[in-house]
Length: 353
Image (cartoon, rainbow, N blue to C red; front, top):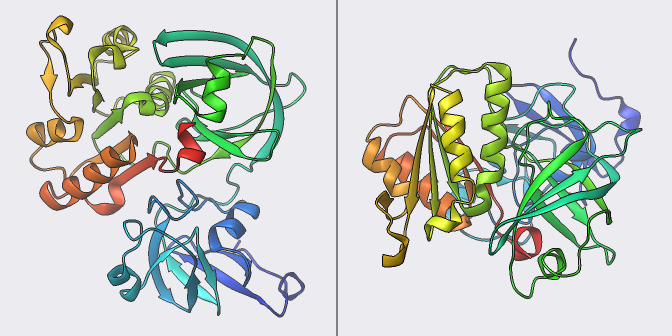
């Protein structure tokens, strides 16, 4: 049965946004962004940084008028805007609007919620990577998709975002991989004064980085640094669900120690015959005695896959890695733009500190 919006739901300064081909539609006030309204009404539109920096929420405007707030040109160029592209995280409607976005989730998408969590364990896997296990409230439920992220709500109201590194079938806890950014308000605390049993406050799940299970295409996973966290969740989910689509995982770091779960991946590849793991190191030193692939991780993909037209790609990590992969895979290897799924956290305030 199609969704309906009662007239009473709209004010004199609100408009209806319809998203094709799903047919989802929702009310947006002229003073808020399209993405803010969609999340408030549990319409699962794609997004990443939410501050006009990454371009993950970009989609085609079929009709209507919007006004864009501040954003970076790499996320939406003047030429793209003139061609009718919309950055939903900073676009406010001035009329009823029709958008085209094939990534919009189905009716009944998972709603976000806020809850307290307890730090149940802390494990340092390298000099600058900490694995946190967060215990969820026993009397509450937290539903998410493998690959999504949560936000910590700090005491001053600021937020820090981290991808969940475990699959949702592992109930009761959330695993995070945090890289220390010296001088960062949150990670300085994690690597300094934080103790087990500390209580934190989170909101989630967030993000549109999750496995599209309605496809049977082979996949390429690309991770840099702690961008491996959501990729780990995807692999655990695939193993649990018995998903046997071929997947090649490229994990890049500056030095071998940055591949902080290398042995875990080797063991996972033994359990998953459909998984091929390719570690890539860009700045190995002689004492590392590294004999594997070298260079930039996304270029290693291009060396192995001249034609990605029949693939899906899932990429997470440093913005420069994700941006380069998106550009080169679509222009040099014929990857369809709508088959590139990314989670690039571009703001230091959002992800890194």
